[in-house]
Length: 418
Image (cartoon, rainbow, N blue to C red; front, top):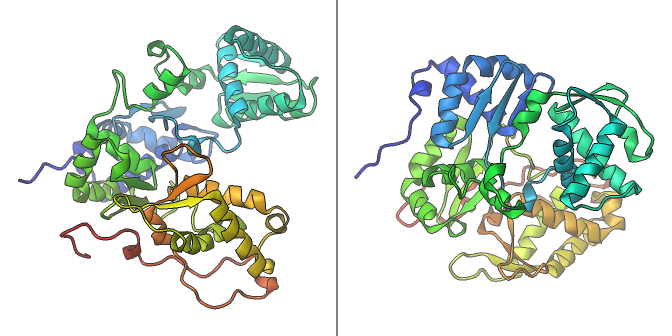
């Protein structure tokens, strides 16, 4: 029996040009869920406002997301990543995130403008109220300055006179800050009134539980839109079964409405953005870390047998160290000086990169030394094309090393190549 495919009536009635513009707007909102005129891609606000009705319907129907659109800004309330630490803002440490939360608490009583020194006093007061100990050490000031700069980037704060940057090195730095109270009110997505603690707030914000939890199909699409690789074994049983039944329709839906190409294989589905716009982490890449990561995949795969059932390869941090050091020793002129001088940091960065693109997965035992390579790692096996070029070409990225898409996973039983 055929199932009815999900559709967005308002979108389906559009002409080709308007439909393409809506897809462009939807992709922009996925990449920049808090968009204002001064932010990157802020020039699309006018187009987003014109298509606001269709965009609201699209996100509500397909992903269960709420979309607020005003002439000055647009806010897409996406689900949080849950306990996934790979989706953090790169510039923010855990301490930096704490300062973002404390700053938001302090800003609620500051009005439209505030001196930096006054804001810092209010942040310290919020920390005392929350039972958080802070001091005036350089590390604390750097974390606070980074948090404030992040809020400036989001448009919540504007540096009217002076800047917040000097605070990192000068405790007496002063600046006049203007607060955009409209954006401030749109920033927090989690249902604070329903949470009885931080952990519960993270669960509620992920959309997996609570009164505003997504439906099965919406939860699956959120994963497909946000994650580069989705394994059936990592999904709750109801979601995995639904995706297996609807994988063909869903791959077409992702491309039609979001411009995302999905590849369905026996272990799961991998998604890519041909324009590389929605990818917050590019892989493969031309940097030393990206090239070493890709070249380390073959020895890691060949050095361990895949497990029964999920076909994941057990690996250890020591395996990464051996693979990376062998590459450094074999082709010393091809890598950056930092990698040569600090191989331990290189190993950490390689593992972090592979984890962010969905190739490396923490072992279920919780042992920080034990990891699992996804079967999707086969997709990025490099194709040898000769010895590396001389040292003068060390910064040139390698030739196109991606194997054909057929190498991602085995075809599902009963399916053939199209």
